[in-house]
Length: 70
Image 1 (cartoon, rainbow, N blue to C red):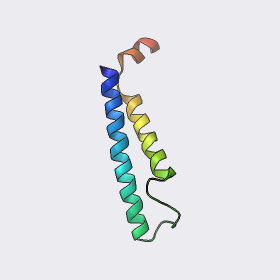
Image 2: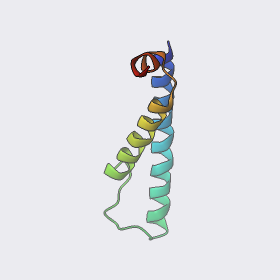
Image 3: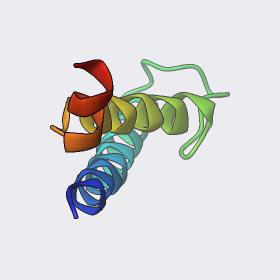
């Protein structure tokens, strides 16, 4: 069950961070402070969302991880 909760939290962080990064990209393009090649759902946004989701998953307290480390 803790693995499911950690995966669910990581998925939620991924979705929310992707939405926020896409909104920031759209604003940057509207304000003309970003290059025109920058696009929504591009490598920068997806990579940033994956990094944040991985960090959220690794911070989740998992009993199996504690047994393996200890």
